[in-house]
Image 1 (cartoon, rainbow, N blue to C red):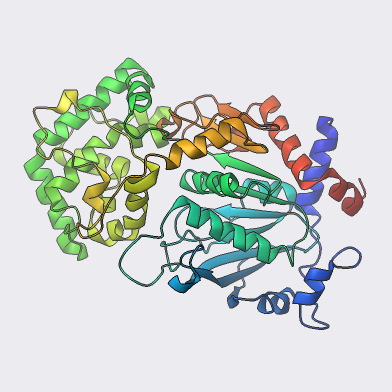
Image 2 (image 1 turned 90 degrees about the vertical axis):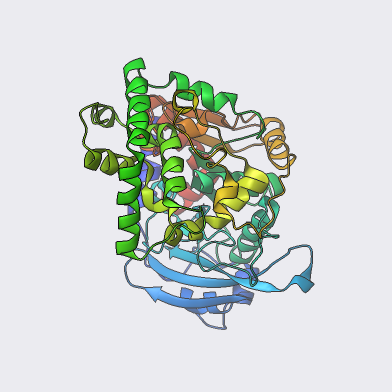
Length: 455
């Protein structure tokens, strides 16, 4: 496909949005007609007619050409056992038109109610259906445990969502997500490979063997310049050498905001976790300007504290925020795996062995039994059979030090030189961006563009 043709197709799809009703080109499929109320032309009526779906609200904050709905879908707690009961999963829908492609979007965490379209949805002018991950946000089964928080159960959630909404959106489906949302998109494809035509995955880790963190450690020993790495080591030491004063400042912040450290144990433990995570989190988001701003030997305690907070997010380790992410750490401790951090330069200053492990963030009464087969199974599928997979990574991002390597047809990995954890298609080289856009047009079906847009 020529660059001119590709750009015309994508720009037409993204800008020539039709009215926001449910009207489609030609006669609607029988399934959609059977689901909608007789004579109903409005998407809200069609949504209310879907079994198990609750229309919570329509929000009037979407951009022109879209309608924004917050939805609740009744899902099984255990897809293999109906007797386990159900829970309501939060969804959001950005509806354009039923005859357009649909993007299945996952954050891997709670749903975001701001009506932000993903890159594939923007480029294709597509509908977008966001799925909140089970056990996050409001999508929490009853009870205190997390026994049904597995990659397979979440993949089955996505599968039921696609099957249900195909009644309204029978065209091409494409899935996407970044970081943990990208991981969730890959896991969905592993168990239900035909649900969507293609998947765009941004900055997704692939921790195949949780016992081997050598790829991450090697990355952190070589990323950036030697001077930048030495500056990070020096500031880590400077913070721990002034630990008492900085912990007191941390505790004062918690007292002023009504926060506590019951989950991780103390402000001292929380500070040590934050310091250990500094290199990983710095390079995930860092830019050349951030390298220049690393505090030097003359930094005051106030400057060290502010920099650590900005780099590692001190609120993450206090209870108000940390308790919202217990499901994340549970997944890491049972299936997804975690990374190791360089500690040799801090050995004389560390007080809490193993403090940066998932166990610190999961209540002691919740068992963590690691499944060593879950990630190798996904990795084998991606390498041997994963088709229609596009991975977009940044060369400066430690999260993808161990990355997915697709081996199926119409799949590839594209790299953004110097890019961090926030890379997108727009950051790719012109040739790679053209390749990615070609894939999106192909997955969405060029026939759709030609017929609908008259190209």
